[in-house]
Length: 346
Image (cartoon, one colour):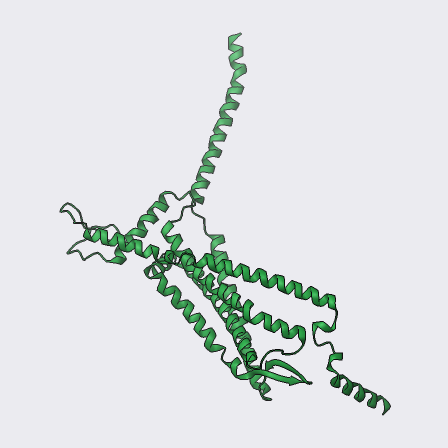
């Protein structure tokens, strides 16, 4: 009985004085607190500076995204205004002579001829790592907008979400207003969802470019501004609408006399478990499986595929080996014939 009374008194004392329990980093050591805060401040400064610089670099020239399409339209207008002579033979897009009445030249036909011109140039210089400037610029510009979306989500996370959460962890309680609690948790989930979906879309976009690069190039060059912004808008729409649950269930709860910002499901542990499992699958398992499979397949295709100019390089290498072999044989024959000529001379 005395032992049980001692345990009950000890429990009551612990709950009566919650500061005795190690709830925050301030309860451990001043040096540890200073060390943690210094690492946090340094990381935050580097993260914000890096994301800001990346955002400026990615969006410094937004007109470059549509530069290829404008160039195509200028070429098309020039070709349409140019009069066609009687001696010109009508041909199809594949180079075969056409029969029948020719249809008017469209912007898509001009774009196809423009891209085929760069493709033929690339074929002629297959031994060089040459890529069409128009195609590479349009691809890099589209990819820059995805990276800008990632930079925005990381920057907002670093500015508004992480400092508040880190303050609660270090102090051991919620020091801000109660209305800020669900907003911060909602913003955190939005940023994480946007980053995850953006990385997944980037992996799928790269997979499409590996499987059918010509189709991907035609689809992207048709209207790159509209397609890129539509995908990014869909990503942020899903992130904003899918995180509304946090605005309803998250709030400031009192535990042992201490206010803590956390989820509260009113005793419905079953619903909380279902929500946690669904969130884990949607934000971690499924994106990880998609990105792992896509990048694994891309790595396999790139490992098995011959790089441009590799065949020419191997042919030149074999030819050089043959030249060296002939040179060695001629040198060996000349060296062996020297004693014979000496014998005939003397």
